[in-house]
Image (cartoon, rainbow, N blue to C red; front, side):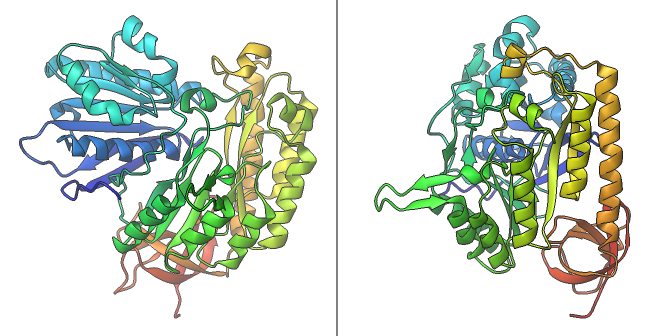
Length: 478
């Protein structure tokens, strides 16, 4: 069912660029002599990292080999994000770096993939002349053909948005660093037309992968030693697939249970949930299976109903609070995280205070926090004036960050003295004498190593210290 390329062994490296969650990714690989080589960087959300793994697999099938050194690559690719202005600025800076590499290595091609490719295709090709290839999220299968054309001097462009493409038959080349955790894309696109968001325009309409290919991928990962999978989608709760032969309909709750049953030792996470769609059925499924992690990323964006209406989030403050109540009622030990936007169009000080009170009410373990950045082409850009001064946005954001850090600290302090089952991911960043790993609530725990344990193993850790970001503990006898 899957294409396989066992000669490619990927090791990924992720580096936080800011406290606001933007991530830089550079694939690191074992070189294979004689073949053309490619180098890839990814920015933005987990879907982009997952897409880069699909791209690496497609290029591997076409005879390319990956390299960690852009100066010796024949093809440089950057997988882009348009969700915030800062991400776009970062990409432009990187393209100028790549342009200098091309000067020293004639014949090297540069390509832009992903959301910026779809949105800014003509600008990249005609105005800035920094790239040879522009390829949207649904056109990665066409990459080898476009590369061949670019080698002959043609500009390679394909930003067609598909209603069917899910890459279900492609086995991603895993670009992670530990061989323990992996992403599985279960759906693509988004039908939620949030007024601030470019995703529906850059990734197209929602479509779900067939459940059999997802289960096969999860089983294959477990058999290869992976012990955690994260099911990815712009809105995983809206996953729906119907078997064309039997007519059987599969919801996200159904899929979640199927993946949990692959093996009790395979942890299951998912991202992202939309508050309007997360059902009690999903929550009860999470509560039923120990290996479905007790953690939900539930973006609120704003705590005020009028602002939520302007954002076209299709729920109000009371609806969101009811969903938070349901989560804590059905899964008492669940952790909730969120996305929050400060300074959306016309937001008043009182409405900003509603967001602060929502953070307190929901008791988020952590949040991704940003001030509003107008994205060209969105409904908000067309209909609303970006009228909140930048200094006000930044001040409100700092108030949100300050409050969230306080709550995260208290949240973690409450874990002192508790014992957690932890999946070991690898060495701690600060010391090779310590392991790091996450508990079910997605909290990172650092603890001294114990002989006989290795990444991919589970162990039991008792927490004795906590900061706002990390727990520290010791292994206890099981």
